[in-house]
Image (cartoon, rainbow, N blue to C red):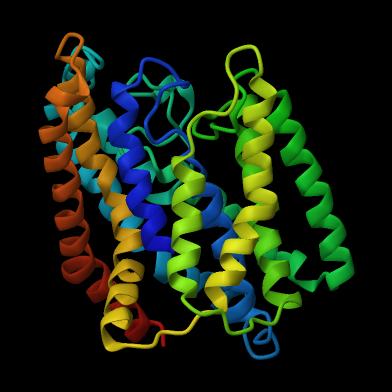
Amino acid sequence: MRGIAAFIVVFFHLAEPLASSRFDNMVNHGYLAVDFFFLLSGFVIGYAYDDRWNKLSIGGFFRRRLERLQPLVILGMTLGAIGFYFADSTIWPLIHTVPLWKLLLVMLIGYTLLPIPLSMDIRGWEEMHPLNSVGWSLFFEYIANILYALGLRKLSNKALGLFVLLAAAALTHLAVSSPNGDIAGGWTLNFEHMRIGITRTLFPFFAGLLLSRVTRPIYIKNAFLWSSLLLIIVLLMPRIGGPEQLWMNGLYEAFCIIIIFPLIVYIGSSGRVHTPKEAKICKFLGDLSYPLYMTHYVLVYFYVAWISNQDGISLSEAWPNALLTFSGAIVLAYISLKWFDEPVRAWLRRKFK
């Protein structure tokens, strides 16, 4: 499921530059894949670590999370820095005015995932990680992991349920009161985006944790098929309502995150792999998902630059380049997985065993 969501994220980022507004993006709710990642992450963290704290230290937990997440954070930022000056275009005309020392400084800060202030924005999109846009979600992923390890893991199921209920209320309020009618945001270091980012993180992550505690999977036939189809339908759903009914789209997004995403995860956790072929497909999608998410935007920057240099380009004209970018993203993700991520993580495990 994580692989399916990662593929749709790439589709979303390729369709986004061709949309004239947030109302006509062909992959309109693709950004909700991030909220699905948060929920799935909370579920997996609870499943993997909740019963191990009698022999696992906080330092050991953080080390394991760093081993899992940080290598591709560093690779993504490095690739973004290497390609930075080559993306000069009408949408980023000031790229070549950025001195090398500033680029390297932003890259080094990016390695830590600490957000950069607006005064250090070197691209012009007001991103907290301008060398690899998707780094913002990893920043909030780390915050959720820290909150889990330092205290929220100790909550009883009832207390955790109350916390999740309050987080769901905050998420719903954000969604229906948003001036844009959606929950998109979280990538800029200012109050508005920090509020969106933390609100988008708290409910799904800790709802996933609660789900791992209180549910017992049953056998659901073809769970992989049904959970994947439901996820695809949710993320490809066209915009709900128009400019005069913005709250309707916000309500749809809140409903998906609070009700549908936990259902999808439950269905998926109730499935079984029946054939070697199905096992290979699931393993491939699962293994490729994180590298694809963390490296694809390096190529999307070039794609967006090309789109911006074409005046009024249509989908029929852009799709060959979009397909090439998508294929390149898969190849880059696979190379990153096999030649960097897996070897580095294996080395880290040996070193800190």
